[in-house]
Length: 416
Image (cartoon, rainbow, N blue to C red; front, side, top):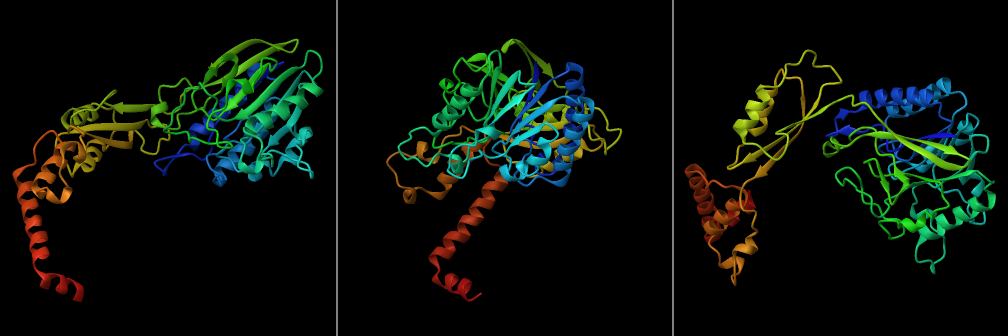
């Protein structure tokens, strides 16, 4: 039996709330269909966060259903098991489950329970590949999924324990046991810029003991970096594209797992081609404005502004003094260049000390406003304020102090 494991697609994702990732997602899904066909995969596991939000755009839902149709056409015998992640709407993802089940696509949106509150194990435990594998598909757990038993200290233990007990009771000899989950497992290397810290029953991380050695493979979702946790057979597939610019150096992958006689025989990591490159100026750290503008000048020209494969650009500038025209200068320099600006960051060059660090045994009211201004300026900027800035501050201070000493000014403001 050969299984392909993928996760965290986040269909419908945008950068800066406006740059759609549809081009990258379509390229990935086409590649995944080709990969499943080339690998002759028996089972495809998708471990949550199919969509980036609970209400994905129509284009994202269309891509999802077009993918299911495409993979079914390329691999008529493949079975697909999908669980919801914390970004997915369980009801929305699971709405067509009864129809998709007829196409050997098994979707578990929310944790299914019977009328008496017991887990509906028939919908969670899914035999695959003519019975060569048994998949325990546990979606992202929400408060509604917890057992109504206040004496339970750890709902994760309770839920996964009940699922595993049911799986062991049904497991046939030489049948591979695969567990799917969408959660943060202790010891995983996470990138917090694009992953939400989620709590399940008050617990932010699940212990490795949740997955005992009799489980042949644990397919995890939620962490965007492809990695093993604890042992080779507990693995996050990772996201297929960088969902934050700090993920640009990740090796985005899917995992292909071969089973023989119900046990893992081989795990191969298949690199996903990068469709849109990410450029950073400078490559590390922050650059002066002059250096950044020179680096932008050296960028290649843009042949087609509508090209969806134009690289994303992140610029990080170190400023010794305020530069109100910074964005205008950067955008003007980028006019006609191939990369497109996604993020512009400023790193201040001051000493970063707080006002409290600079003041000893003094109340704020006892400080001269000029001293406060000088200290706060030094926090952010290595260069002292320009004479024009000092003149403007003195003018503002005189106006404020004059109003404070003149009750008539307050009455005038109130009447206006």
